[in-house]
Amino acid sequence: MRALLLTAILALCAIPGAANAWWQKDWSYRKPITIDAAAAGITQPAGRVPLLIRLHSGDFSFADAQDDGKDIRFVAADDKTPLAFHLESFDPLLGVASAWVDVADFPVGTKKQIWLYYGNKKAPAAADSHATFDADYGAVYHFDDTAGSPPHDATANGSNALTAPGALSQASIVGKGAKFVGGAAVTVPASAALEIKAGAPFTFSAWVKPDAPQARAGLYARHDGGGSLIVGLDQGVPFVEVNGQRAAATTALTKGQWTHLAVVADGKSVTLYVGGKSATALTAALPALNTPAALGGDAAGASSGLANYVGEMDEVRLSRVERPADLIQADASAQGPDTKLVSIGEDEKPSGLDFGLFGVIVGSVDGLAWGVIAILGLMGALSWYVIWTKISLANRLDKANDLFLHQFREHGDKPLALADGGPDAPRITRSSIFRIYRAGAEEIRRRIAHGRVALDGEGAAVVRAMMDSALVRENQGLSASLVWLTIAISGGPFLGLLGTVMGVMITFASIALAGDVNINAIAPGISAALLATIAGLAVAIPALFGYNYILLRNKNISANMTVFTDEFVTRVSEAFRDGRDAH
Image 1 (cartoon, rainbow, N blue to C red):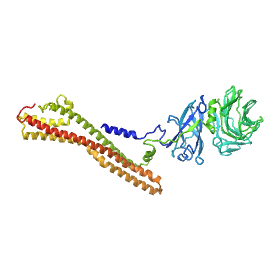
Image 2 (cartoon, rainbow, N blue to C red):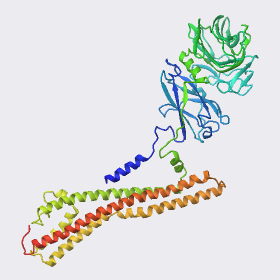
Image 3 (cartoon, rainbow, N blue to C red):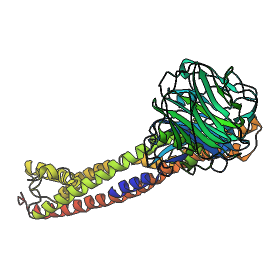
Image 4 (cartoon, helix red, strand yellow):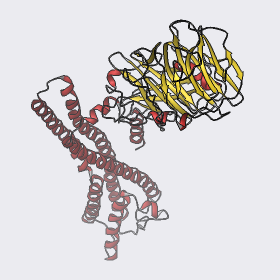
């Protein structure tokens, strides 16, 4: 019995299981995405970060995802919590995509892992740009619109621009980008989400790529009465002006090269960041600003002497809070062309009974085959129950028989001494040999009660007959229910074969109706049909081994009962041949 249990445990352990939990089994693939804050030099909390994830054909199988990327999902490290995200671009023909993922607890000086899931052709779209950005973003412009359309705001504020840039670049720093050719600026509307109160915090950030050095080229400008805020390039050198007070970096930007710029106001000072690093600061507080702003030039009606910017711009963000320096650094690192912040791992496929090759087979099994497999499952469960009960019975009988024979032989000169069970009656009475012995002993006692003390040949034959009758009943008890094992052995494979043949027939009939003859149409149905045969063999093989083992155990028990019958009849014949009382 222990051997059978060990075999079952080993068989269960051999079934492959998922190395890690799998978010939802409807998705066929996942990738680990590692966020390495230490590699990017982020040593202070950055807060909630909308993180850019770039995909290309070298690290992502576009053929296994939906054509528009609707099945893409991002899940937290616990493999349970979906993360808000949206796709800025997804082009399976070019093999490139970019996604923004809301990472609420950005790591500080350590690594963090999230999961990218894909490979579900039936999944609905789940992207949500509004949820990707926190409520303190007043406006975010990806410039991913069609040519001639004003940029739309990716946040929930709806601060869509009023005018369009001169052109769109199809290959910007992140997907599409705005291309300024010296014409009119992009007008950003005045709204409650973009209002700046006097002395309030504020953050502006953008990627810029100047085409040529210009004098006072405006990147972001806003005027309200006597107050103003200007971010621009003067001969390629980034600068920020607040109410005419100016602070500039020390180095000009490289022509034709993307650079991340940011301006952060905390109510007391205004800091200019270049490439994610602090470049200069200005001791000033922002004035109250509640008028339209301009990107790539100056606001309508303003006379600040700003030139219209010539170059490209992308990923403009306006926040009504002071963003942490490490968030500026994280944006510059993650969104740059050579990021060290984000790395994408290899594809992982699920394993276990619900996944992989076995999952394909199970998914192709039709209702008829499931019916056959269900019947075989009941047969298998019944056969294992029979094996368990019969082996348990054999173990109990062997122990009880050994105890009875030991005590019987201790009373060799008194063969009827244990007729009532003796001192170990509770255990001895479980013995099959004792029950045969008691049948013979009761016959002898009956004869003695009727005055027939001597046991002649005919009397010994009667005693043997009573014991043989009890032996037959014991053998019948040993063989009870074994018929279920013989049914499982002989019927299981045939029932499984019936399911396979019918499954193959249905598969070929379906192919004939569909008119689609290819290996992808045939293979799943055939492999699923063969599952019924495997189920039949899985029922028959353990039943066969168990049946043969039980027969051997029962044969030994029956032989011991037969030998004891001969021994007992011989002893009582000797003890009672002269009419002596052998009690």
